[in-house]
Length: 129
Image (cartoon, rainbow, N blue to C red; front, side, top):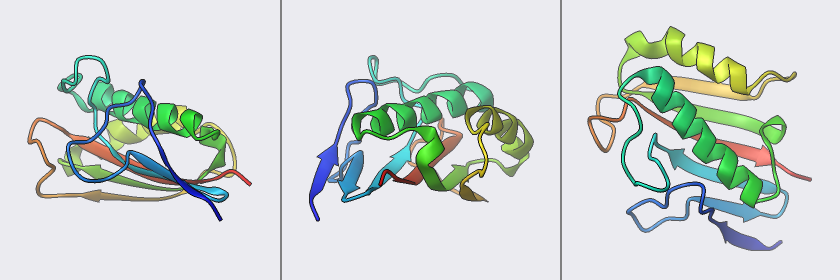
């Protein structure tokens, strides 16, 4: 099985010692994506809707770079800084996942996300076999 790092100029690279995504055989593992604009490297928006769109667009860019698409996602983990954002996050999320079956998902509220201005992070696993 081959293992390779996946990057995209349409998604930001994180500041730490990790890959934005990894393709391992028929699986793509996308590291938690923030609402960071890949060009300006700034947090995009202050509301959960804008930040959710940016984070999911970053996921989409990495999936595309790995030869995958949203319909191939099998598992999503979403991390919200504020549990009150859940319903508004879910409305945006659902617009990106308008296929069936929908991927398995875990959504949790976390006490601290790396930058306190970030309201969300999203990571996923896709099957591209």
